[in-house]
Length: 141
Image (cartoon, rainbow, N blue to C red; front, side, top):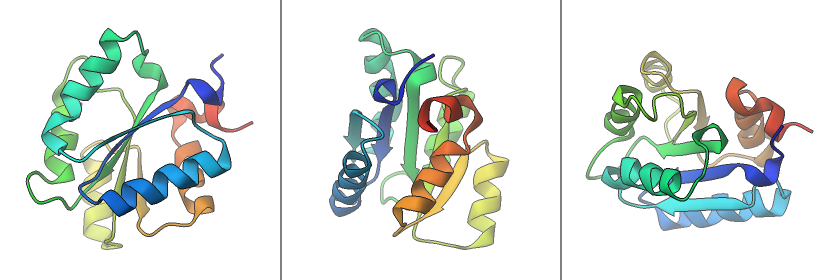
């Protein structure tokens, strides 16, 4: 069984402040050692490919994906992941400043593993992470 230090979080968000605050939150809680950020949503599949080439098992990867980004929205990126034979099972938690039920519904309809409204508190964030079935045993001690 993997421990929490083997989880790799990949955060895709165009907002550097959100990335910084999330990285700080994760490190402060000591939950995850590997935190990768990508500000260009079009690069997510490439990043997942690079991790795979480095020997990172996709079972130990979780994506945090912002919905509202200028070039490509999170729904488009989520669709690409779910359409990918190689990465369709990677858990994806959608991040949004919107608490609009339509966004939440669409996220889950498209295969999101979770949904967190920004700015989030650490308990909300880690509850969303621990609710993802594929990695629950790795995050909850």
